[in-house]
Image (tube, rainbow, N blue to C red):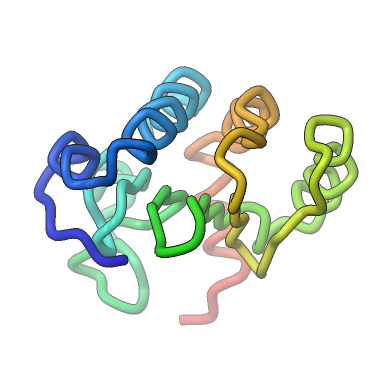
Length: 151
């Protein structure tokens, strides 16, 4: 579902009650574990974490007016989703996450290229997500982005 919001709290306030606490808990875990330098805000109509223009003036190659995206959380119709660009861009991070996931969740991993879908809200591996957040610094993400994006 698409929510129009200017701040993460505005986004959360629009959610159905059962989703508000889940998204807030994800937000808290991400903010606690995400390395310094990333900023939180709204991008792509989701709560986003990105490299600000002050650290990466070139911005996102698809639209340089946007900061370099890294991670988003969203409440969709049938799931809560975590979008993590590092899983898509870094095979080591991807493989680590896929191998660790079964140790934290009893349900099968539902994952696309960078999207992890949680259809059962009581089975979100917050501790694992916190660890995932801590694995890539802003500098690492910029280097990975520049290595993989052909301008």
